Structure formats: structure tokens, C-alpha cells
Image (cartoon, rainbow, N blue to C red; front, side):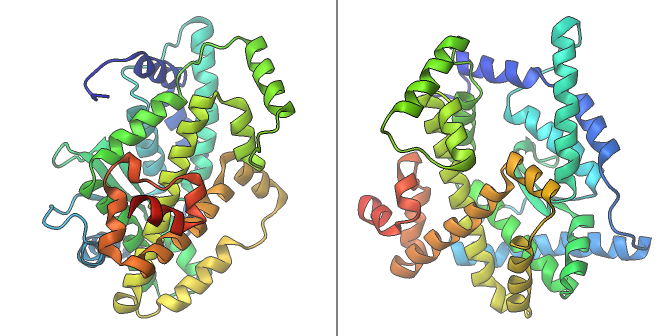
Length: 358
């Protein structure tokens, strides 16, 4: 599908995004976002400067190891606080969903948009304290206008490095290696952005089903013999149309690949450029799997953070095995097109992907 064509799916995606008052979402998120760890202005300024430098220094070893984005300019990196990240994330969601203009604030539509804005703002506030860094392929680079901005949230990195008791300069570069890998993935393979947009259009489109049809489809699925996923994935399988669930699976596989590839790169590059990488990885993995209080567990389950953790683990195992078997150059065949992306049955069986694609 040509990105310049206006389709019904694009209109539907825009209408869903327009049901949320994103201005209210950003304002709510900023108001609810907790302040970062206490630090002096000097320490904070030094952290901002070091993170900006680390993001630039990470580019060369990531490109060298991956063989991607060679010769392309180093894009902008934005060092943000939590409130700034909320604003950036709100704008990114609007760009991702193709929302243009302001939400309708009149009548019932306005009430719905405001309710959605408050809910979205609460979620953004929660995430603002958890995100270390993020590559946003949808927001234009302020310097060039090209799609794609790398964001690093300084207060969260300071908080985590303190809690883990790791060397700050090493941890900051280690985090940037992961996030820069995402930047390189999209810079070297521009089709990935449109691939995400195409699948999001399907996920956010109105399937036109009546309540009765939805209930009938769910009942038929529950009574059928077709195997179903567990947990959040199983719920998505029930609630979505077959076309939407296929798009959801494609997005899950893409996310698993992107996160696993970034984790593989940060660990492969780390020993040369990050002296204490072994201590950092051990402490970070322990923190990822540490027990959490019941409220945290509920929130993490609802927004899929535990599924996100599984993406890192499964994706890294996939990339480790393929690169170990055929090398990085052959592995890079995976970036050729949507047809070379791993399928759900191949993520945990990399040999199946190698047989099919290589």
C-alpha cells in the first residue's frame, strides 16, 4: 500500500486516535508524573551531557557490529525529563495513529475524548517513571524533518544506576547501545516504519461487527478445537477479528525481533566498550525479574510490560542462535522485507526461520 494513498483503514485509525483528547492526556500525564531522584543541578547537567555524548559514541560500534546504517548521518538524540517524555510520547501517539487536528470536545464525543485523555494521561505518567530510552520512528527529527527521534530519559537512568549500584558512565553507555541499535534498525531499513503503520491501521480499524457478532465469534472460538494462547495474548485472540489478530502477531514478532536484536548488540559490543558490562547485565536482569507488589503486578499485566520482558528474552535467544550459526551478515537477511520477518512458530525455533529464509 502506498503511504500517500488515503484508505478506509487510515480514516478509521485517525478516528480512533481522535477519540482521545491528547492535549488533556499530556497535561494529565505531566501533572501525575512523579519527580525524578533528588540530585544537584551540577550532577543533572553532567548526566545530560554524558548521555548525549554516549548516544553519539554508541553509533559507531553498533554500526560496525551490525553492518547496518553505514555512512548515514547520526540523527538527533533528545535528553528528556519525565514531563518532557510525556509530551513527546503524546505527540508520538498522535503521529503513529495519523491523528490530525484537535479532538472533538463537543457533546458525547467530547466527553468520550476527555475520558480517554485522562486514562491515557494516567498511563503515560506511570510509564514516564519506567522508560529509560525509546526510539520513536514516527516523530520528525527537529533538525532534518526526517522521521525518527531517539529519546533518553535522564532521571530514570540516574534512578536505576543508583538502585543497581553500578558505574554511572558505564551504565549510560550500555543503555545507549541498546537504544541506538533501534535507531540504526529503522535508519537502515526505512520500510520498517511503513510496516508498523500498515499493521497499526488494521489493528485500529473498525471491523464493523455488531455486539451479537462479536459474542458469536468469541463463543465459537471458545468452543472450537483451535489452540489458543494464554494470558494477554489469549485475550487478544478472542477480542480481535482474525485479520486484527494476524496484524497483532506481526507487530509482536517485529517487537520481539527489534528488542532481541538490540539486547544481542548491547551485550556483544559491551565487553569492548563497557568495562563493567558483566556486573551491569547481572544486576539489570535481577532487577527485571524481582518480585513486585500486587498493584505493580496488576498494572504491569494490564499494559503488557511482562509480555515486553518476554520479548527481550525470546528475541535475544533467537538472534543469538541465528548469528552464532550463520554470522551477522547472513542474519541481516531478516531485514529484507515483511516476508523475511520471523513467524510466531519460528521465534522459539530459529532453525525453522533459517530453513525457510536462508
